[in-house]
Amino acid sequence: MIWLTWRQFRAQALTAVVALAGLAAYLVYLGMQIRNSYDNDVAGCTVGGNCEAVGKLFLNEYELPVFLASVLLIVIPALIGLFWGAPLITRELEAGTHRLVWNQSVSRTRWLIVKLGFVALITAVVVGVYSLLLTWAASPYDRVQGERFDAIGFMSRNITPVGYAVFAFLLAATVGLLIRRTMPAMAITLVAVAVVQMIVPFGIRPHLQEPVSTTVALTANTQFKAFRDEGDEVQILGYNIPGAWMLDNTHSLYDSDGKAYSEKSFESCFSVDMDKMKACVAKRDLHVKVSYQPADRYWRFQWIEAGGYLALTALLVAFCVTRIRRPLL
Image (cartoon, rainbow, N blue to C red; front, top):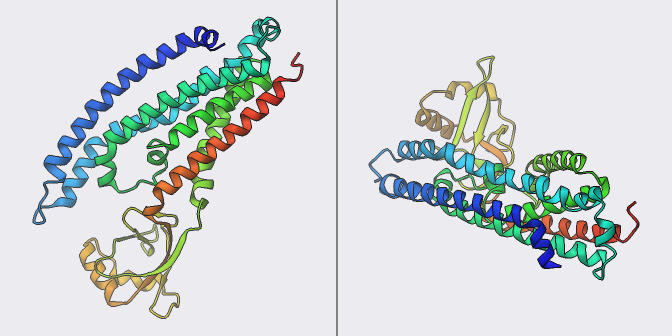
């Protein structure tokens, strides 16, 4: 059964291996470039130098290649679902070969489990290797950027892409089993994967754990930004914790007693010179209420999200096994 599955799937598998080899070569080249620039420029920046400007130049230089490599890794699971998952069962149903295959000594349940398991394993290996290489290549960039919870970065680093890819494959196979036609199954899979990509980062991930909420005093050393709205009034003051995921970057101002502070009164501090603005704010003893996910929760979120995808995958497998035992035609 495994040999037959390999014969049917070897063209796709070999294509994936060739593509992965090309991507791997590029990621190794990109990773060496990023590390060389980081070691020579960013890591070697002295306290007396303009290290902030050096960091920005470093990020600007590699922003596009890292972004494109990250987006590609997010797209790959969708492509796997479209071209590996959706036709997996529909191909047999449309050609009518299921009548022969499912009446052999191998039961349809075993046939399905072997096919799903074999292709899912290849999916995990292909995406896992790509994710490992991208995580290695972009690690100096991510260190300087300091936004590991970024939607694109989080979904394209470490273990989450593996769980997501296996889930996308099983989702497509399940849709194919229900729809029984390849093209409609591919279209529905594309929409479903796009919906998941939108819902998880912005609707589910922020609530995987209860956010930390606190009130923070604004001092001359606090990282924040302020800007004027169209009416030329200062209305928003943003606060940032390095490495943390700020869930709400629009904050109200409060005085030391916790009473609301008029944002219009803050206008007198507004200046294009951030040092002067921070010094002015520090004198007024202002506070902001912030809600965030701490930086040390990153790996916890990675495991929770990857585990969630794998749990959904297990449910899809159970559904497919139950469904295929019934007459399909």
